[in-house]
Length: 245
Ligand SMILES: O=C(O)CCC(=O)C(=O)O
Image (cartoon, rainbow, N blue to C red; front, side):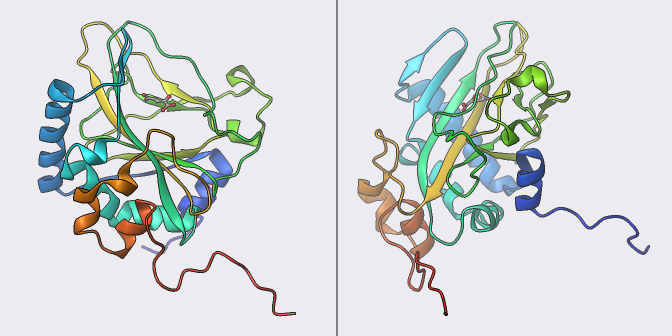
């Protein structure tokens, strides 16, 4: 059938228009299986930075299990990163947040790096899911178009999106987009989700970040993973733009 509609928006166009973009089915079944095992082990044996009634927080997951580190090699993720941040992209932070069933939703907020305007090539938060997240199971929510005006809270915007993730779903947004963990009804299972934040090469990584010193991660890393870890830029990537005039 001929395509008579509008062409599909690119990830960057969607991010600029609505404040977020999504991808689906980004993990193979085999990788999903290993991620589920790693997640179960993390929640059992991992070193949580905090455990609160509504949420547990595990930083630096790429050092905990190779299944998490291999996310850095995912081609769908990398395509989006190159489109939004550019060829000099690196990892800023990587963590798991486990939402817990409290019968409430968490507060809408913009991330700490919000610089008061939409700057997607400075900070991109990528949320990744290994299991289905129902509407009352702590879905990550975003407020479409909230990225356009940092002075407006969520009540100024008519629409909110609860992202109903499937296994292998990806949701990405920048610092200025309002977001939260949504309603997590009592009796529902806990909801682990992975959050990877990416930045350009010249910005510093999170203070807790030690992925750039972790021998096990560095040992067999290819050029792209070395760059994401913050160790070495790939050959031929130049951060300066020269005028031809
Ligand atoms: O847990 C979630 O779905 C949202 C996480 C969040 O609000 C954040 O990473 O700032």
